Amino acid sequence: MFIGLVGKPSAGKSTFFKALTLMDVGIANYPFTTIKPNSGTGFVKIECVDKEFNTQCNPREGYCINHQRFVPVQIVDVAGLVPGAHEGKGLGLEFLNDLSQADALIHVVDISGSLNEKGEPIEKLSYEPSNDIKFLEHELDMWYFQIFQRVWRKFSYSINQTKENVVKAIAKQFSGLKVNEDLVNETLRKLNLLEKPILSWTEEELKKLTTELRKKTKPILIAANKIDVPGAYEKYLKVKKEFPDYIIIPCSAEAELALKEANKHGLIKYIPGSNDFEIIDETKLTEKQKKALLFIKENILKKYGSTGVQEAINSAVFDLLKYIAVFPGGVNKLEDSQGRRLPDCFLMPPGTTALSFAYHLHTDLGENFIRAINVKTKMSMKKDEILKHRDVIEIVHNK
Image (cartoon, rainbow, N blue to C red):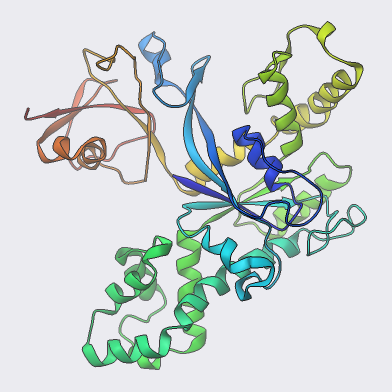
């Protein structure tokens, strides 16, 4: 699982990245603070199944607090993209290529409208954030289109002469961007191109094809950052109305980072994604810290229910990509060989079956599969049965 953070310079991507990962990265209010991509581990949060078994889990990876399980996800923060990125402006092609293997993108948008299109500071609320959403869509679509356009003449003539399967050929051309044959076949049918001779495809049809492939392989969630700036909420409502098909989440990456740092240093107790926090010892806080924490509580947590950062990563994985979390386990034994209870939790794509989950755990389990057992219900499952979110599955196999 690989989530890319994108957006124009100074929109708050690096702060958002640090709030997710607590990695030490450069944060500054000027373009191209980030040049090389930052890669780290963030976490999606789910209700742990351990509570249903009246026990406490011991994660091999990630962690669990108060039966809230945090499952690791790879996060990559690329440098800010500017208009013309697909043409190489601002090292744009290099930054776009860093996203090639991303499953989904979180577009961090400065919803306060305090940056121009290049990411340079301007008067607050004077810029329309909707322009950033349109610009990023265009850059990503043109990136995909140019990959195809560069080889199109030779590619189309070769397909026409050799009669190679067009679906396989296109999937191969875009394989580095996570495009597969099923997706190509579905898209060509949708655009009525499957039965049309490839040499007669127009440039407009090619653009529609590559745009559809981009939307499917690089879906975007909007993180409406800097929501705490006065007037930003109205901008957020306007953007939501203009882009009804997007998941748009109000966020304050600065607030999330402040809460996580305070928690890390033992000043407060805070579970990421919560709507409140607990001050451990008020005497250890400076007046400035008290004022900042009060601002976060009153203007962000009470108003929006969270800082939005945890909600954004969760929504990208579970709402945008429709992934599910599945726990391996046994009806009579939840521990692994080292005594850890429910040590593993895997993020699986929609449509995962009992058999495909067995293969994911280990090839031998898939090849020697007999049946699966739903540990919660103790009912047997057929190999083609579709798994559900938070299932606990035991694989029965030939030893």
